[in-house]
Amino acid sequence: MRTVFLLEYISDLELRQQITATTNKAEAYNGFSKWLFFGGESIIADNDPEEQEKVIKYNDLVANAVILQNVVDLTAVLRELTREGYGIESEAVATLSPYMTSHIKRFGDYVIDMDNAPEPPEPQLILPTSIVE
Image (cartoon, rainbow, N blue to C red; front, side):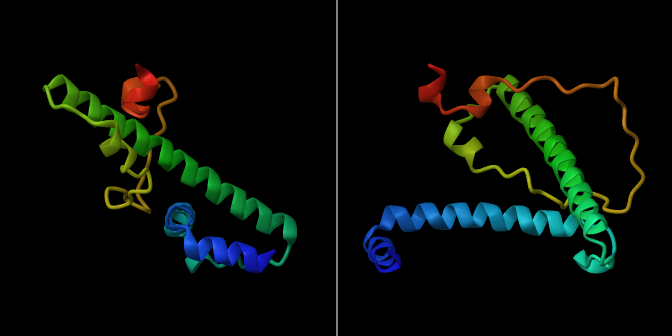
């Protein structure tokens, strides 16, 4: 079975590209999540499995919250560009990543305003044109 897969992998360029793209996405998330891990350089110092699980889940929660905010910010920029008359192609939007960190103050003070909900994304900004039409 492994040999058959390897032969298919070697002979199928599209399969290799798909596997590479998927692996890159997973690695991008892992790097993003590791960057967000506060203190200890991603080392879980506790030997208690329950505490280890909590640390991992809390880090994933923080990562998901930052991803959501990045998507909200990207959507706002895309809306503004659309209002200004720029054409935005779905292929270009598909290359954007929510794993940006350069604008984040990792150890900054943050205020959470639960009354300020983001606007819902517009379907034409997130779906390929052929699906929207």
